[in-house]
Image (cartoon, rainbow, N blue to C red; front, side, top):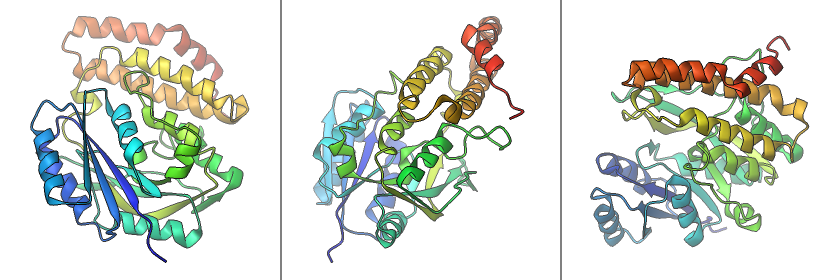
Length: 313
């Protein structure tokens, strides 16, 4: 049987120094039947020209040039022209193992699944890999069990280490394009919701019929100097509250509140701590930072969740 075509969507914005590293990892994939969709999201550097050069040299590459609208919208632009049976989303400042697609596709087809996730590395700026901590309770989730994967992305149980069981990022997955298109699933803009990936997963995972886990680590999530503690977003806390409201709206259509609330609140409080860390480590105005930290701690929503969240359960 002929192997399925797999679409690989790569949003690109201001990543000239990392683009070659990413593209080399994709062009040398051991699984060859792929199309690589490079989405130049109005990049102000020379990424647009580099995209065109790649396309001129490699027939498997398609290029979209568009006005800047953010990561989520760039991925949607790629989905519009994707022709594969399955699709992956790769961030252009990261890179993959050259066997990633082969491994995920083999695991998916071997089990007759529609979706496959793999493990990943946190890769330092010096190139040191550390296996990311994730807790998959099973290697295969069928039917309603797929919702357990979503719960793991929403948050972890009180007795578990870390704020979530499973990372919410889409770059470690192989997804059915039919499920995405048949259900009109698109990414929101990260300018609207600070985590567009979890919104995508809340809509996708409830439609998936069979999810399998590839146990090897195949993706390198790279620290390229733009981490939370090194960059400052004045509206981060407000954006976290907007995201929480959207999560509650979506999750109420899938679960009973007592099934998800403890996980969601734990994860939200973890993000609140990171907002405070941002003020301490990245806000150059220390007087403003102190005022903002007090505002975060006194915020009515934070206080309400602290009252409702019981970590003894």
